[in-house]
Amino acid sequence: MDPARFFAASRVVIVAGKGGVGKTTVTAGLARAAALAGLSSLIIEVEGKSGLAALFGREPLTYEQVELSPGGGREGAADIRGRTLTPDDALLEYLRDHGLSRISRRLLSGGALDVVATAAPGIKDILILGKVKQLEREKVADVILLDAPAAGHAITFLLAARALLDAVRVGPINSQARDVLDMLTDPTRCQVVLVTLPEETPVNELVDTAYHLEDRVAPGAHRASTRAGGAPGRPAAAPPDRVAVPLQRGPRSPGPRAAGRIAHRGDRDVVRSPDGRPFVTSLLELATTAQVVVCTGSGGVGKTTTAAAVALEGARRGRKAVVVTIDPAKRLADALGLEGLTNTPTQIAGEWRGELWAMMLDTKSTFDDLVVKYSTDARQAQRILGNRFYKNISGALSGTQEYMAMEKLYELHEETDFDLVVVDTPPTRHALDFLDAPRRLTRFLDHRLYRILMAPTRGFVKAVNVAAQAFVRTVSKVVGGEVIEDAITFFSAFQGMEEGFKTRAKVVLELLSDPNTAFVLVASPRRDTVEEAEYFARRLGEAGIGVRALIVNRMHPTFGTGLAEAARERARTLAGTDIGALYANLADFRLVASREEEHLSGLAELVAPAPVVRVPFLRTDVHDIDGLTEVGRHLFG
Image (cartoon, rainbow, N blue to C red; front, side):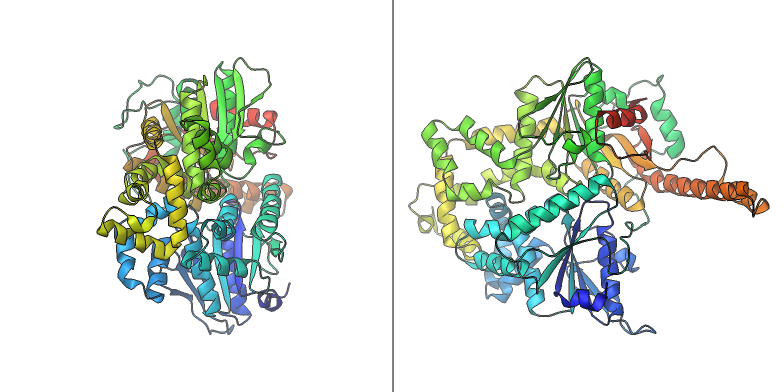
């Protein structure tokens, strides 16, 4: 493919794909290809900590634009620049540009943006996409490359514009949403590059993502331009191999190999961590004793397969187990060999003493059921379900999903007879949104803006007092007065249900901190996923929650206990023979395996004394119970 022709198609290129397929590396590769074609490029990072800047030997990106690679040189390449985009910074800049600088700081310092984002999820996404649209219009670079969220969340991220057009009928946000949608649906301005690996599951998820983008982001309009692979003329590359820097240190351990052996000894006394949770000596203890197991990790590390395997082992041990996925990707159904899953637990037949059930969160169905269940009567339920504001926030807008995941966890734990609930979370950044959902909901219901909306008024201009009235006007300048009116109607119908939501949020928060809830961290031995796992372990530690087990998938075998150098020397002495080639291959494997252990050493210390379970590369992808059984042999054997 001719790079110049490829980039001439549109100024904006959105790079998306399942986590762990090398999406960020492809983004950097595309920037380099553009530079060599004489085109300047701007890389935009939206999730942070992707390691993109490290690929150019630079410090992590900030909101301010920086140079990643200067132009010129022997190749005559153009320059490459980079920056991150955050909703708060994008909002401040937008307000300043539109003569609203006086209210900008008030909006953020008063917490209004968080409240509005809670009430109308998706607004933060549109602020970021609106900034991309502005940069495209200003022609700040010949090519603008957006490193998008992982596949499932890329859909909700790009869907925000269409969804907000219905939720926000007038005002700056409506204008932003309309302009963004115009950009996304115009193939001369924007195209999407989808990245995958030549494996069954990533390819299936890529196909699903492509159809979702074409059918939901721009139905009836220009179809999104989707491509699979890497940069023009190059194969898709693997994710960057970054240096792992431990974010905090736990007790010193004898190293990852010894830590693994210690973690699997059966003669240790059970001790407790500072958060009161018992340390376990094997993952099997969690499958047989824990009430809730939350599997977390970055995309593409085998998190969903691990969750399914834990639930299956619980069923084999005589427990009634259910595995629920919050991730929009349909990986869980694939792992269980099913055509699909619904919002209601489905029992999976098999030869085990207990029961195995599975389900996939449906955000809108969960919200609808919740409204019907907790309304004081049928009329209140119908008023809420028919409200325009409710119809928009209960759909696919990002943010709502995390609240409903919280509610589903409450329901499965408190209102059913399941012995074990295994939660498959979205990739790390979105998993943090799920964990913070109870606090965000409580903050929202306690916020003065919510109390203002709940005050008996005939419109937002009759708020309780002058200060409150000014606060609501501030918000209406951003989202439009009609949204405030719709919100008032919705929250009026919602009246009387707040305490129930707050109580449930408190129960879920306590459940996540309960000793019977175990957080299992899943990673692969690559440095980027190890760094992400360290970040998540640190965040859990800040919340007073310890990692109860670490699972590292796709480890390379060592084929014995010798050193790579010894095998390499043996290969030299036997050079030119078949056995010499085999020794060279053995040296390569041992070198890779030793580097993987080096990558893991800091993470193993960080979660110590949690058991570290290593799962080797398997011959095939996991897509049925037999495959899960094979994984289980490594996890629990």
